[in-house]
Image 1 (cartoon, rainbow, N blue to C red):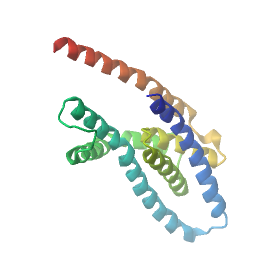
Image 2 (image 1 turned 135 degrees about the horizontal axis):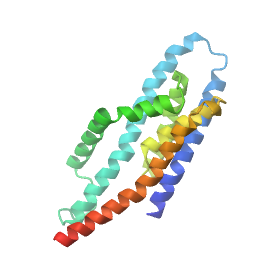
Image 3 (image 1 turned 90 degrees about the vertical axis):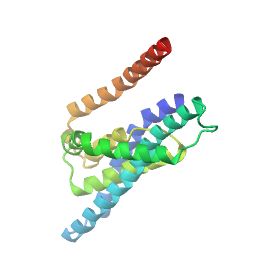
Image 4 (image 1 turned 180 degrees about the vertical axis):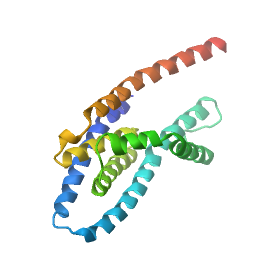
Length: 200
C-alpha cells in the first residue's frame, strides 16, 4: 500500500517535469521551423493521442482487472491471481464507455481551463504523459492517468515560460479534489464492508 501511495504522490510531479522538458525540447528542435511543420505537428498529435490511449488502458483498466482477479481468488472461483479474458474485455469496455459518456467535462478542464494549449503543446503534453504512464505500467505502479495528464499540462504551461498564464485557481481546485478523494473513498469502502459483514 505504501508503494501505491508513493506512486500516486510522485506521478503528478513526474508528469509536470516531463511536460516542461518535453515542450522545451520540441521548441528548441523547431525554433527555426516554418509553416511546413504544421502538418507533421498535427500528425504527431494523433500519434501521441493514440499512445496516451494505450497508456490509459495499460494502467487504469488493469487496476479494475486486478480487483476482479483478487475477488475471484478470495471467493474460491480462481486458484491463482490471474486475469480472465472476460475481465479485460469488460474493464476496457467500461473505461471506454465512461470516457465517452462522462469524460468530456474533464477533457474541457484539462484542455482549456488550466492553460490554453496549442498543437505543439498537445504533442508535448500527451507524449510526456504517455511516457510516465507507460513506464508506471511497466513497473506495476498504479497511478492516475488524469492526474498525470493534468500535471503535464501545467508543466507545458511552464515550458512556454508563461507560468503566469497557468490558471492556478483551477489547478488548486483539482489538487484539492485529488487529496480528498482518497480518504473519502477509503472511508466509504470500510463502511460498506462493515455493513456487508453485519448483514451476512
